[in-house]
Length: 419
Image (cartoon, rainbow, N blue to C red):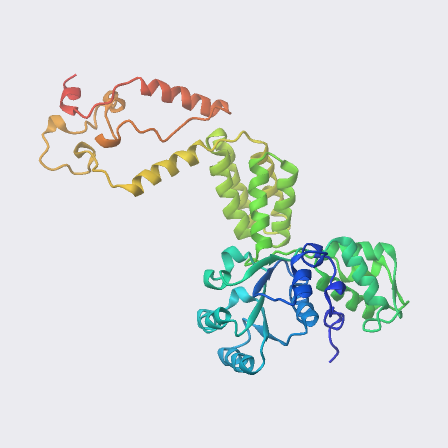
């Protein structure tokens, strides 16, 4: 079985690593580690295919230290224990851990004391945000370094090198500029994805030249970092809400389209519903209702047609006036309710015990209802709702609210019932 192109072309030195000048450039941290022959436990985080494991291996080569690869998913506790035994007779052993965020608790417990003692040096690689995905005990013992996605020029350089290198295609294939641009664009910073396109195009190529038509045939879609468990997915969801909140309809449609491409109806349904009621809310209640209807329509017809009602909903939400007053009000009420449980006034309870009829809530006389005190005495003057008058609808609510505040509310129902 032939080795994948990405494996055959893996760099051996920092100078061969594409991009990452913020780590490998002059006076940058990894360059300084090599110059001073020092190494610390660290975690490289960034999107797939940006070179995290490659960087770790190149660093070990540059420092001329022994290293072993360990996969947090497929390797077991015995594999880890064997590495510790090896480290006792092989000073400076570096363990490069792929998918480090997936280390289970048993493996973490084994790893921690040996990182602490310096028996091993760990270089972890993860596609997840380490501040959320990495166990704090591991994180506190490692330096966190971001590995950034490669830009289009880096991808193009790597492709040209792959076609020319004796380790790659040794100048037996060439590529035209249009095809090169498409691959760089479709790769979205993921060099492994670019190499995979080259490999399949090389198999399908009959002319010795990889052209635009061949690339489109084998790479019809852009590579998107949209695994539901990874940061790319959550970033797109976050960007969708922020774009709608900022009334940028074009950006909102773009991020919706990315979620549609990932076929992620669950996230779209949940996020658009939250956005409608959190960010638009009382400024345009009809838009909230129409968003729910649009989601149901999209689920009924499925993709690709389902994108049409969803697009309509996103356009309306983005261009609607915004009001977070409802969201802020319920959160303020929740915060107070969770801090202390005040007694509900006796006359508001479902079955008040030992209360004279004159002191009870009068179900038959609505003219008195807006004069009754409903909050407990200790918080009777608290105001959770602060109106936002960005829309005519909430402006009308605000005016009614001000009118109602002019009435004195009492907890003396006997006196009120006599009037």
